[in-house]
Length: 204
Image (cartoon, rainbow, N blue to C red):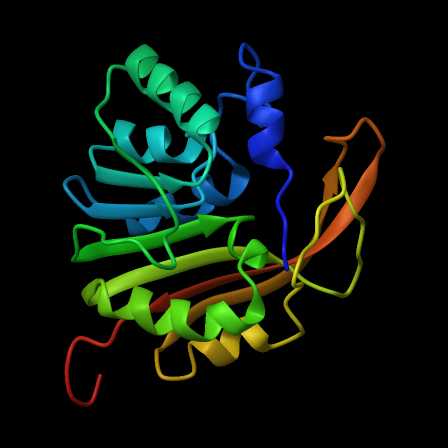
């Protein structure tokens, strides 16, 4: 069974943003796909930094996370930026969400979903997506593994994320290494970034 340590960290450090208040680099890279008024779903939104960023761009954002402590900090961050976000405490793989969405996003979250559940997650997320909408995900891969704070991850194998979108046009796919030191030890994670577009109709 997979296990994320970050909900515990959010609760242990209530006055500190574990990931900071600024949006992730991935959020910045995909923001060009967004228009004002777009309906955005942020899966595993944590302390809300990317959800709040998307809201400042004029998007209608729903942020979902399993951590009540993380969402409490997310609400605080949204107030500081003067934006509204719909925060949902729960499991995006199983909960009911207010579809359709123009943009479904996750950054460092869905590798915590067990592989057996991911087989059902991706088709469900596609059904929540408006025609021509986009999905953008950043996941950890098994090319280089570093375990932080006792986490247990079902790492993505090479090509596994792309295979989940074999029925959609893939806009961009990139493998990379990212530097990290969240446990106070410098290390790297191998990641894959993927952006895919929902078909608009027959033949697209």
